[in-house]
Image (cartoon, rainbow, N blue to C red):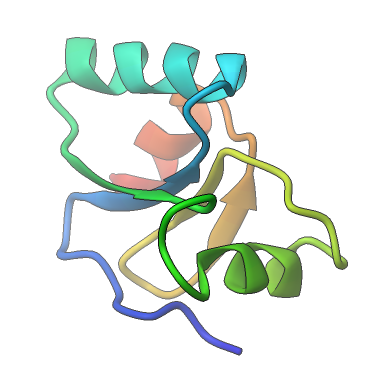
Length: 86
């Protein structure tokens, strides 16, 4: 299973839940750095949880970030996201 839609250059798609503390931390950092993202709540968007499971060995681990090149990262640091986008 592949990501539903790849993000535009310089942005990311972040799979989240409303209660995820790591998601909130990453979103604050992205906002501070001026990095835009498309957020997909895996509890609300049909198929999102299945996609997250497909790239995380069957686990619904968030945040799962998808980059413009189609690669993904599970719970990446802000530094990792910035490096991947540069």
